[in-house]
Length: 373
Image: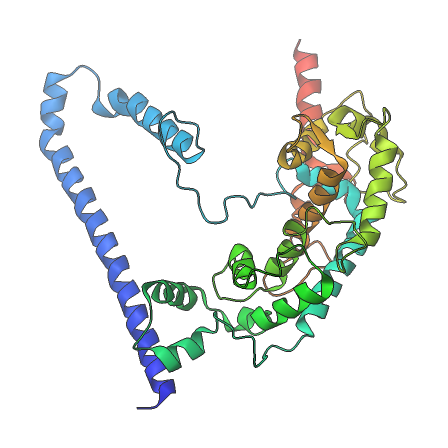
């Protein structure tokens, strides 16, 4: 029996196992739901005879408290509960929610140079050889199945299941593997411990969002930012955003009027409108500082990136926050974006990207309320 056939057969078995498990879960859920519906039909008349309030209304507060309790447990806020965090719980919507308006405003100045550096990083890491004789790739699942299908560990089986479940050839074929990442980290002097033999394997596992054993453009750029948080802006390593950090620092120092190394939302809101954007598009300050409807966008940016002091952001946090926000908006699994195909600006702006839709609705409601009064 040829190795390729064994590999194919093994993957089919894994997929069949996953299908059976999913069907069992669905059947179990359906059984529970059917049983509950049967109870409902049997006792509904008795409930009507015994109780003055319909059961749905009587149980609404209990269901509400149960839902709140589940959410608090998931957020780690419920006393005495241990939270099982998802693997990538730390990945936030850095460029979306309220902060989206902040990045909309900065796009005309910062997006192009940031995207250019993102493209350069992925192009350069992709240029390294993907096969090196003395550097095995522990995530080459196809070879693992072919050579060792009878001797797989439980961990390897688990990884292969994730691989087969999430495998997408279009993403996989353009992604970079361990030998390439090994070469890049060493040449560029990124922030890892070179004496740790498992560091490159753990590096991939830390940022492999789709579990295929490689890093695609979105994953690789996230790794370049998050792994190098302490060296972003440094000249001692390559692709550590040295030139971009100079621009970010210039903005930060201009806004930091009291020179304490910290920025508050008030300082950003007061002085950021003075930056030269050469356009009036996406202008969150269009109604002036007195209206202050978009201060939430600044607050959201600070809340998502502040670690040292609540309500304030340091220079390094400012750098990392900007990079992560642009990463969130300008990368996909298959490519690095240069346009607005992922920013969702059309949901926030109208009339040639000049009018803030939410601001318009807020102002309209306010004026109507004033007229009624």
